[in-house]
Amino acid sequence: MVVSVLEEMRIRSLGVIDDAVVELSPGFTAVTGETGAGKTMVVTSLGLLLGGRADAALVRIGARNAVVEGRIAVPEGSPAVVRAEEAGAELDEGTLLVSRTVSAEGRSRAHLGGRSVPVGLLAELADDLVAVHGQSDQQGLLKLSRQRQALDRYAGYAVAVPLGKYAEAYKRLRAVAAELEEITTRARERAQEADLLRFGLEEIAAVEPRAGEDTELAEEAERLGHAEALASAAAVAHAALAGNPEDPEGVDAGTLVAGAQRALEAVRAHDPALAALTDRIGEIGILLRDVAGELAGYADDLDADPLRLAAVEERRAALTALTRKYGEDVAAVLAWAERSAARLTELEGDDERIGELTAERDALRVELGALAQELSQARAEAAERFAAAVTEELASLAMPHARVSFEIRQTEDPDGVEVNGRTVAYGPSGVDEVELLLAPHPGAPPRPIAKGASGGELSRVMLAVEVVFAGTDPVPTYLFDEVDAGVGGKAAVEIGRRLARLAKKAQVVVVTHLPQVAAFADRQLLVEKTNDGSVTRSGVKVLEGEDRVRELSRMLAGQEDSETARAHAEELLAAARADA
Image 1 (cartoon, rainbow, N blue to C red):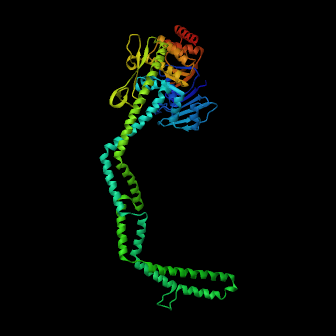
Image 2: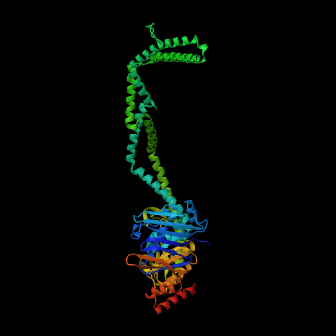
Image 3: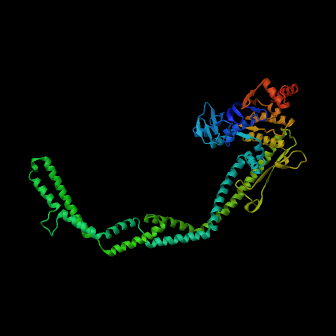
């Protein structure tokens, strides 16, 4: 099966590393070096590539920014490739290029396949590509929530399916309960709101406003208020156009235009241009007569009744009283009335709604209890298999007598849901509290790993858990940061051996200080630093042959040239090769 492989990382201006290239192999790669040389920066770099939090303190002093670039070989059609291509990333012959830049001011940028992308996208891809484990992850394993998540992850669909149904019902129950509480606890406020809406709607109904009425009344009031002036102006204009009956000798526009037309009619036959002008004068005469007629009608129809003006102003005052309260104009008032009527219907239906919500809440609690019981049963079945598998792995990690088990319990809660005849507390992940127990030797009672495991034992438990995951829910690459902390001797050899076996199924990168672990690696990288008196630079190089023996000797005895240490180093390498 083709899996994704992290082939190379280039690190620039990150911590103590000035400019280094980390070449990784598909199998087991061990990263070693003296304390302070920058081994942890390798883990930090990968964390940045995987969408980890950017910190300006990571940028090398004097540099403008830190840059980490990675090259990951990904199989065609994998979830990571599909998601990357959706974001516009392009693959380079089956290789996905990832980069992350952190400025000295703390700003961060991410690129994927040559395309700028949100940092969150890198974190999404990380779930399908790499599992990172370090000291903080060991401490995280002590949390009950992490232990439950580990069990659920191992169980796979057996837990994921009922958990999905439970989560959906839980979300609906929370929404129903919140709405029910809002209605019941705010009953007085809602009643007051209903009264105000009812009053407003009654006030609007009493006036019965009509859309556009305010504009029409404003125009009518303007006309009625100036009726005399309008009538006088219309009369004068009419006389100018059509003549004044009381002054038959007066000259008006109509008479003048008619005279002009008669003068031209006599000679129009002699010139087509003049004939055209004659026709246009005729049109003017017709227009003058039309306008004069409309002016006469306007003056006759003009209403100068002061009673009508008073009625119009009274109606406008009623509408203004509404617009002062409910909207800037009548249209806004009518819109407010429509919304308020719908809201009042909702508020007046509170009693009925409370009954509906109460019934739905009770039904959802029953459903949630049944789903929680199904979920607990699935977890219990998976817990037995998970504990047995981890126990078997611990036997391979120099803990042959250790036993791992899970305690799955519930807490009584009168406000909870009923499961197996008990009313227990519930949450978004069910009703179960899952705790990982360890009995390190025969006769020892199982105790929570937070209390019953030493640092070295906890490291091995975490490794055993990850190895079990590799068989059920594998990821292409595993990165362990000093998973061997607190371990030595035979246990260290067993950890190295187990990591090498894990590397047969996936890429494994381990930052270690133990030669027993490094000896099992397919490739060993040395992070070393030199000091020129002003700037510390670190480099990363692949160790082979004599160089690897010298590094293992240093790790064993602190002396690269110790004959005893060299013999021991060669023995470790030979034993690791034989075990492979």
